[in-house]
Length: 368
Image (cartoon, rainbow, N blue to C red; front, top):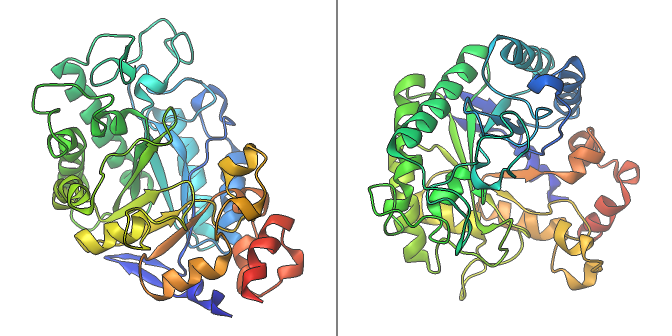
């Protein structure tokens, strides 16, 4: 079987991964007082023991008063939370795993009146929750500078704590993505404007992070076309637009693009079977991670709507492995399958298919 393709090593500078499987970040809300517990450390250790090549943690908040909407979401600043994260790193490394934190700010997606500093308004580039729905004032230049500093400080803390790199959460309609998208960024200063100008905020984060952590410390950027409030939203309508968007980010120092789609098997643009990760790698030549219902018999959104696997596309793993063999992308992020089964990777590698969950078994049916 071609599943052996998932277990080829991958090197990125000084980072060596034993295989191509990445644990996708998944919010858990299991960190009381914003601090990862021993249970959180054990949770990630089990996935490393289970054969996952790289773990990307749940979103963890940078040091800003309204970064997230719950004090059960871990933060990435302060002595106690960082000590908790050090335990996580040590547990994962003790079994030979690699791990990176996903650095996060919810921006306007944070509901007013929730989380730490509940009475403080949420922030966004133009104060827009969605196109035409303004609920607060635009971020001032001082606020923009403060958030850039918060991300850079968090990246430096990750390096000091022993993490193997960092991921910036620039997808799904959260703060970084709110700067990317014309629907939520109407600024007329250097942080707004056309598709290239709207990358400036994140480009600054990446440039300043690179200065702090050095040239060999991996920076991953997760981005998406779709938004939580608009599944049909698009940053780029053509490959040319996508290159205009990706170019400044790549030049700033992003090492890997984590290309979030709802269904990895869907083509991104007409006239080509390439998905978002495939197009990203083709355009900028950087390694990419594909993600979107990998290992499932149907996709997350389709299953929530009651759709059967026959109505949601060619989601069998054969499709994924054929794309990986063609080197359309380099790494494969797995979410729910690893959430359900921490040994998912080892079971796939050993072809212990009878031990897999029902939805993974159905996805594997295309291989037999």
